[in-house]
Length: 283
Image (tube, rainbow, N blue to C red; front, side):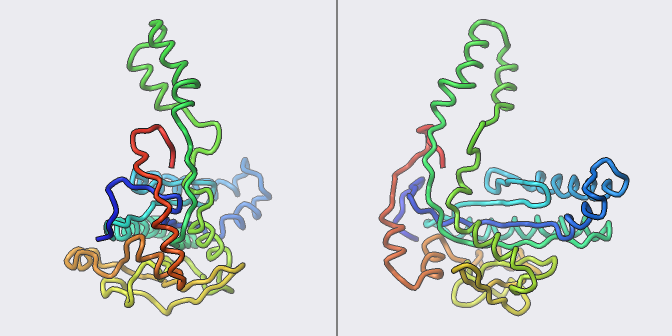
């Protein structure tokens, strides 16, 4: 186990991201002349509603998501203390993609492609306390203290309050997201074709674990980024649990896998910013 304190954060975090893209969705709308009121567009709208419903059901605090139309992103920082979060993200990503494609197949739709990538992200320290103390939070407290609203109503207002800007700092300066998006965009020409589940080879150790079944690796390169992606067809969760998820890497292991230069890992380790929990600071 790495000599890392619990809750320790760094300026440079190691992120895992999955980008999921519904195939052929734009073509359906094009055929409907981009008119959402038309009968021809109803099938496309029903399709995207189902897609987003499935993403919502799989979203948790350990697997948060960001959805925009026919694309969805899930993300998580990996741990330098354990490789369990790496496996957990892989497991959840595979389950999400599998359920989406099962729903797609039931309606004879072309399915979704998913690309899971890892990479560094630059921490954005966002101070949420100002918004809580001077913005919407202040207004809610004032209404509560004046008796204008009840405690239950105050809770409801707080739960419904939305950030007006930058609500997903984890995806800013996130090069795992960049890699996943570029790989997906390269499509068949880049070796990333079909409604399959592609996983960055850098999350695994020297050999791919036996509890993973995959097709021939795809060597990929675009805009200065490069990597190897495994089209994974199945994950034996029982076998993975039996060997305590042996074969996946922790955060620092992923950095060493990605970069030949040991100075990169040294810089990551040296970028400690302490424990930000309980300080109202963002991520």
